[in-house]
Length: 326
Image (cartoon, rainbow, N blue to C red):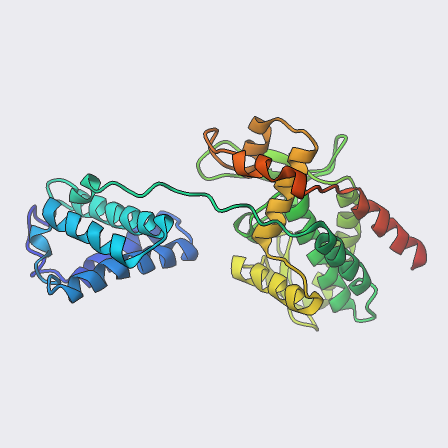
């Protein structure tokens, strides 16, 4: 591509397809690509609405300011406006790299400040309800359904116990779990920082050992082999290793409807963060376990601490009670 090449010679849709191809080659997730597309579609709609679709060659600071005004009128949410501006800025950075622009005009448009939503964790009674339901499901006479329940126990313990996101869980390998030492830990390989480990509830070791034993048997029966800790299955056999982030979210949707409880992976993770604060872990350690920057503020969590008290002792107590009955 030549510098200042006219966009009349190259369709904007094609440029954006090239942009998404580059992001994909950099390892960006499908969810990230989807979000970028949604944000850039807003820009495309704006151009069409204002008959500027073929005149982007001259898209400069005045046009950027007009787009900013459009976003102010269209969205009440500061975070929504901020996302649209950030996506467009990154896209124009790409155009600068391709020598289609001398500089990025979008960098002249200030982003709206990011406002953090008030944490809405899964209520403690709902955490207990889910755990009891999972314990009951492990007693199913259907081996596969029993194993799926044990898998879901592992998922719950990794989110409520260690604050993992569904993106962390999706490709987690069995080798990422360490059972040596005083407490079990899970290793997180973060793409932008050094690997780190997060402690898990003590009961995790007992639950994991039983799960891996049953999983090994079912792998043989299903004629599959994989290194991932989790798996995808139907009621009769294991289909493959790992679970997609969306697949994990669906699991929680099903339990939310079945048990009539307030539950999402995000809300369960927030419950974990409140649990860490209740346990009086240092802020720096909590932020490391969350995978956020040292500048991240825990202020909103601390302001609502007295409304959300959690402990994890019930996990082991209820688990051992069920073992004694089976």
